[in-house]
Length: 205
Ligand code: URA
Image (spheres, rainbow, N blue to C red):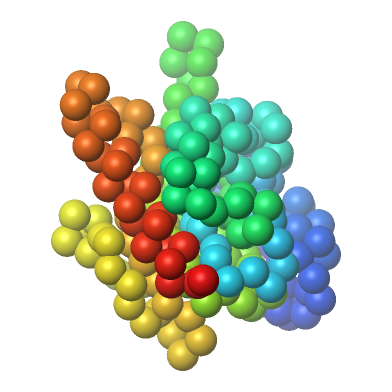
């Protein structure tokens, strides 16, 4: 089932959009994954976060950012004074891409074909949430929204105009913080991440 642009464009609410997305076959990722993991949160909220794609735990739970990266994200949101219930959280790609190794499902970065195919959902989420600011968590989110190659280190931490209605802010993906090799780097980069979230928060208050 490949959703038509009309189906997606006409969905009157996030609930109906999410229901449409459950059967999406617009790229091949639906087949090995358990389910579509759609965005969640408030409709009509000023702040929207976009990650890369659901991970193992998200694919099992059916909710975005509930695994290890989600825990870092939740902690940083809280430190920045942002209530997760008051924002909208989604991913550039709505299915988990993985490879099997030793009976474990290992994350694989989604390819551009999936990012492009999934953009209809992200565009529709933007239309229904109409945020004032979209925070792009990592390179996949940034490339999906900006439609060009992005270097996070060069573009992070500043608010810019994304379109007529909405601003954008690029920052790191929380899973990057988990992969850092030592505690000092982790603490430093985590603090920078919280600063980026504070900037997002100050922009919408
Ligand atoms: N990483 C993401 O980008 N999104 C999730 O939902 C979980 C992990």
